[in-house]
Amino acid sequence: MMKKNNYAIIMAGGVGSRFWPLSKRELPKQFLDILGTGETLIQQTVRRLQLFCPKENIFIVTNKDYFSLCKEQVPKINKKQILLEPVMRNTAPCIAYASFKIHEINNDAKIIVAPSDHLITNDAEYSRIIKDAFKAITNKDFIVTLGIKANRPDTGYGYIQFDDLNFLEKNENIKKVKTFTEKPSRDLALQFLDSGDFLWNAGIFIFTSIAIIKAYKKHLRDMYDIFSSGVDQYNTKKEQDFINRVFPTCKNVSIDYGILEKSDLVYVYPSDFGWSDLGTWISVDNHLQKDSENNFKRGDQINLYDSKNNLIILEDLKECVVSGLNGYIVIQSKDSLLICRKSDEQEIKKFVNDLKK
Image 1 (spheres, rainbow, N blue to C red):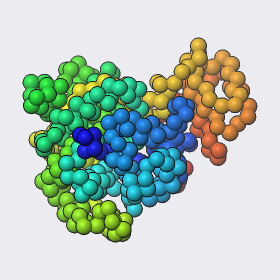
Image 2: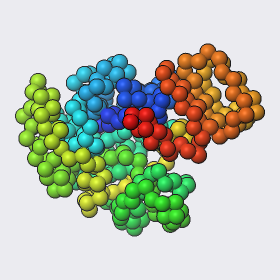
Image 3: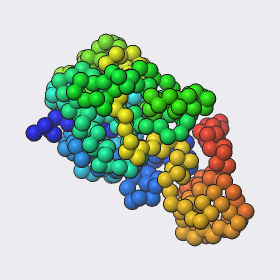
Image 4: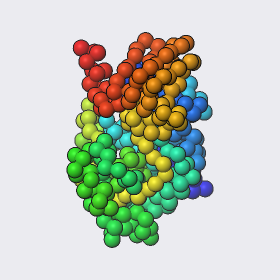
């Protein structure tokens, strides 16, 4: 019976420009089978969430342009569960919209917010932690975020510092958050790693619908006023017109900055379930099966000679010969080609922006 109160919000509106040329505006990263598993990232996410949420309680928030992609890739999700943003406005408006809608369906709702494009390799441990967090937040105003145990001084992630001696009542695994830090310098990341009380911010949140609505009322009052004005229109034929009208008026602000960094009711659950945000081609490369020369290749016929440490994905070439290449990313889609040193991978977003000039 308790499972009926479990809900999920999947954030699926991003463009994923760092995965150019495979990920483009018309087909973003979450709708790609980046790892060659036979499932796209959003398909993996929906399947994983069904371990603790009925499929009718899973809501996907995405851009209006991706409605057809969502229906095509997750056909078991009813079209009423695909919430369409008329414009991009970051995570706070996205989560507010879905949370207010769910609260009107079930005011006892317990909600997990999950990105659509992350990798999780240990589904059983992930499910155990979410179920434990759901139990901990019942009838509470707390917000729980998942923190990943850091194993390297990565500067591409946000960090969460926790107080090991201050934990959630009846669950010592869930610690009080002390600070949030966005993408630190390498020196600072090394200090965080050495201290032992910092975790990577996975961007996965758990709360009751009541708790998150209270948090919006306290910390993002303008946004609360916008979405609370539609309580009689959610889950009716008037909902989309209402959202089309009010959503563009929302501030472009993240849930982290708008609420989590300001609230004193935020806790973190230190976790280790094989997580990666797959934020870059290098992070993808770390999860791919390589040959004896540390090359990964995907394509019809790719012959490598005197080449090592390369990531090569060729979608539409019948034959390819590569000789003398070391440490490169080579990605070819139907109409675009990327050849980039792995060491320059952080520049890909800039390269894509330059193409638009």
